Image 1: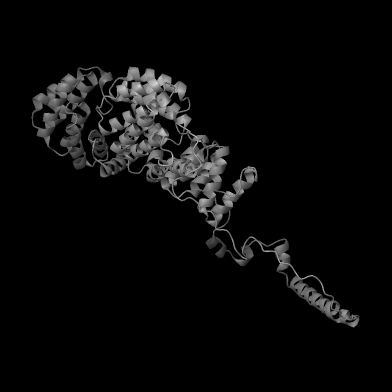
Image 2: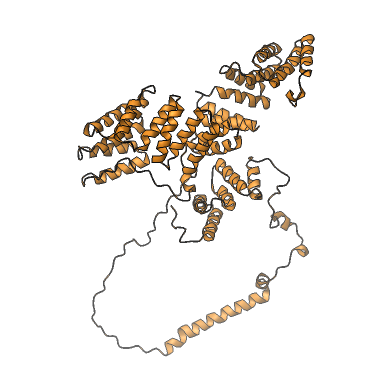
Length: 566
């Protein structure tokens, strides 16, 4: 961390230190200082602009500049930076960076009489008379030093008789540090800026469910296990807790924490054994029943865990996580109403937990209440911006509410930290498609399908639509055919295939898809599109009579059902 605190230096001094660090090329140090400044003032667009120069990742740089522009829409520096990074369309109102000094080649072209005359101290220093006077002054000074420093003192020196007076022997005091030794500097963090560094103040970690006083023999070992638990080092947690068990054979909480470590590690069978060992020691230990329910569901998603949740609540009705976990269980069973009842109780017992409001969002989404779902997700975000799972949830809900730019902002930040999440990339691609940034959409879909194609077939249609707009017709048709396998009655996908086949001059295939459009069209707008393309296709198939009937039927429809291209 930094070797100062905000109390030691004022904001201006810290800001100047950050700029000096950037000029030295010390980007990690500059990023650390600017992040500290943003903790005190997150709405300062100048700090965000300078932070963009301190980060190495292009996506982070774009995020910083977009934040600066959002805070100050007239910030020309942020606009120019985004244009240079390709994240903003060039605008004539945005002027290039001004030159505050002549270029080197311009100075070389100046004639002697065109060069500006130097003034002030520099002009005086270049004068030959001034230089001669300076040399004379230096010579006079040296002569005076020799005369008064060496000649005159020797003429008046009296040498006294030297005596040898015994005295105490010298005492030497050792210094705590070696001569010339310097402390190793703290290594600066390199990589995406951790989300917690953007907080005005760090959150207090959630305490463990139980906080049993430990014996003297196991106190240090438990402290090591607790630190490893906070760091997510489950192997270290397990090894240290197993060392404590012989020292505290009657401590049920040690077995419970051991079960939690195995559960987080994904070892359901070992977790079940540890939870059962805790219940053998203390059958009234409610948290162990919650652990059993979680481990059972981990091993078998179809397991009926309601009895275990009831047993846990009977023993500990004030443990909020039981209500939260049971609510998640109900949501997974498509029972959102009882889930909301449990979440209301969980919110009372865990008022600052973002997990409660993320579960609220899932429950409201299951009830098709998109507005309340988004409000709950935004509440979760406001409670803890460092909770990464809230970002893809926000992205999904912004897409559901057709707020595509906000979805992009949430998902772009998320994929900086979770680079292997294929679904997040696919949602990002869909969002870019909806705002008509087709190349960005295709790039994100390509990345998503490279990471993992499982469960993403419906997104092939969106990549097909984007490729169609980019005139990558063959790839568009391939993608749309893949997407059609997921939804054969989709009007949009069948219409996209009509367009693709028409451009490929596969008019027979296009006509077959027009027939499908005729059967699945529900609205007048969809029927108008079907007739429009039927007329074009039939003309190419040398069926002018049917083409004419289609045109007449189209012209007989109301004007407000026509698309602009019609």
